[in-house]
Length: 523
Image 1 (spheres, one colour):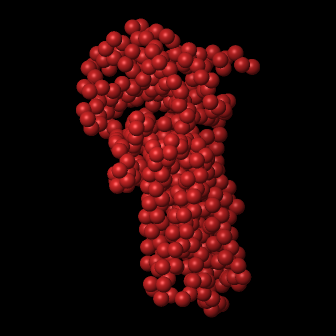
Image 2 (cartoon, rainbow, N blue to C red):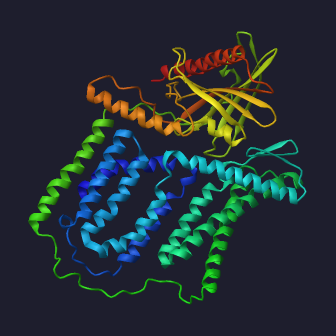
């Protein structure tokens, strides 16, 4: 047990850090607490059982081997998802090895609860967020039509009286969906609801969350238009979300009581006492010799994982991490003129924490006589941030994107061509770096981004085996995203794209050089 715990601890810490910077998983500590409560309830007063012993079951060997192989692959591919799944495979194997079927049976409810900590693979949770945003926007628009509120829905933006209300991920329901699903699953497992009733309650939870978040968007729109109360951000927005979440929990409990009435079930579904048998008398505890042979194989195998982890990551340089505090409002961060381009306007924006567009941004408008470009510096992000998801959430369709790595832009940049209904076309160029100007490696967006991470990790592993210099790593700490964006009624010409690219190269260089100079003078 100690060897397995030491092997999985780095991966669990890795996954906890990953979840802690994503708003839709902010309730994950409650999932862990719920699993602990379920385990305590199931094991409370349980008699000691003599299991078959880990060395006497092929299932234990298979589970430990699969978990060990998954952790090795997770290390090589730098995949927190694969590491999390591997840990979930190890839990029932260890439970069965320690106490046989009885201990496994008691562990299963807590194990089922912990599956909520396993995110969808290939960043599919982002796609889920986008779909929920679209669904919430469409349903909210229908309700506003029924209330005779004149508005325009474009992508995930509702425009009312010249004001744009962006249906952010919090309004889409993803945050409260995870929390309510966790509450529902805890209720089902704690009270031992049947499979049919449990599945229906989970589906009902999704329905109530969607209804609550449509109500949230509609209420914000009505407060803005009819009473002049701003509730799209700030404490009012958060208070509305909390009240509606509590209402959704109450509606879910009411649904549970309705199902109990309809099924004529008088019992709440508590823990039904089971006769305690002494187990198979022919299966006693594993003999010391077998346990010793088992430990001689398992302990070195899992301790080798610890060595693999530190060999792969222990020599990485620890660079200073700057705190992602709001930058001082500074129009002069970018030059007044860049060739024929002239700086015309400047503004700042503050959004929700963990917003897809960044909590803070500074925006400049550069113009030629025939073309205007918006330049933005948005932050903070926990790492490389795929900006194409943000534009998709506002109604843009990605027509094509490519990674460009010129010598003038360390780390490279991504350029994207987009379109949206109404004959609108867009051209986007962006890159990312930390507070001192160190670059994040540019990578393709969408479903290809996770593949890039795994390929880069595999290439680093190969380079170590072959004694070659390893590819550069992304810096630690918050990412700052710099972009230039232009849109119009027609597709930008190749000459226009080249002019925008050259402006981007000059502007991002100005930011990096200034930040690098600021950090160079510090002791």
